[in-house]
Image 1: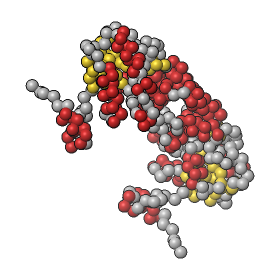
Image 2 (image 1 turned 90 degrees about the vertical axis):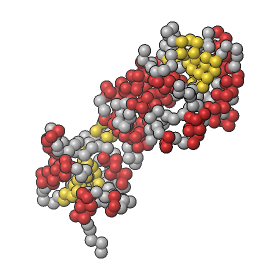
Image 3 (image 1 turned 30 degrees about the horizontal axis):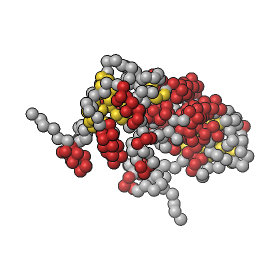
Image 4 (image 1 turned 180 degrees about the vertical axis):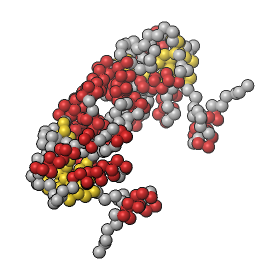
Length: 200
Length: 200
């Protein structure tokens, strides 16, 4: 005899496929849900279905949105001459939270990684080139991570996208805010030194 | 402008009400779900609704079950003369996992706690007394925790349920399995000493 009724076992299996939810927390959440008020449980299930149904990718930039073009692409107050290039749609959220970027976005959809079979044509680079041809873009800020694939993709893009009148930059790498020298690994520190800026 | 579409914000709010899910993991799960395959998402929502609809409390012992009486109450091979008294329905799972108990269960539904307004009549004690009157019960093993309320409730029950021919025991408290003396706090160690057993 299984220890738990089938419907709970099924729920635990479905929950443990979520990111960051292990078997123990899946069990805890499932046992909470079967004892919670029916209204609250239905609300959660509805929220899941509704979000999945309403959300799609912006046809211009690739952001997660309920309508296309997304509110950022559609916002005339944002600087259309400045495009921040990110790997995934969720990265837009991180950049937006920083509150320092007022341009628009473009989601690449991945990083070049021949070992994983991801070639440049698998990414939304052609779409970006189309935007370069039609929109008044003056600068592209590449905001990819600092791992091998992030570096390779950034250099590939800088070369491929280069054209007269277009500035291509990459976000700075260095010490994280609030961190001390003693906590920085060698590579971070070497990048921080390379990226040093004059103070006066 | 909110950073995220409304349907995602609603989903994050619903997810962060789950036990052990903080705002960051709720965001991570929500962003995963809106980008996951529709089938997988629907499966999760269905599992939540189905489990909540099918699960109820066993009318005899109070366990979570899809049918009443539950498979444990209904299992003739289990020892009906031995009842393990637990606080919550989910505690049955912990006892069952230990694999050493072959009797039946009774869920108390809480612990006596006058400060929180939980009096004996709020617990399933009358139901247990009814079972004592009709079932051939010879021993009740009280498996409540070892905090103040657990202790008080255990002593209250031992006194109230006492009758000729009924043994009332409480699970042992002592060193957790695999732990050393140096990790045990004073109270655990004093309980372990009190509960010492002759070896030969």
